[in-house]
Image 1 (tube, rainbow, N blue to C red):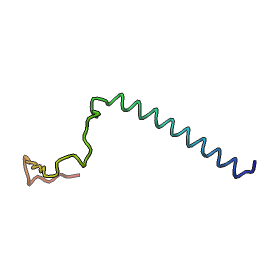
Image 2: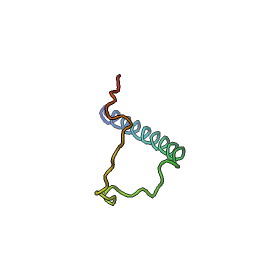
Image 3: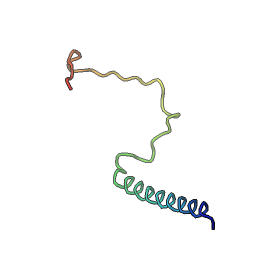
Image 4: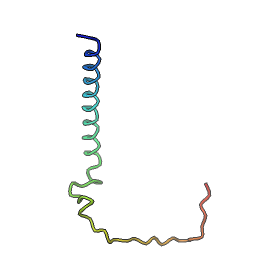
Length: 66
């Protein structure tokens, strides 16, 4: 095999290994935080678009110093 083919195969194998690692991490996170992210969350297109929120500040003149 030529060097180019070997490099391409190696890159693909590394990519597949990384995808497998990501899948394991995803499964672990989904299990750990299952109570925070239920499976029945509707798609954004199915959510109402006429919902507005109002935030009442304790002190609207308060400046936060950083």
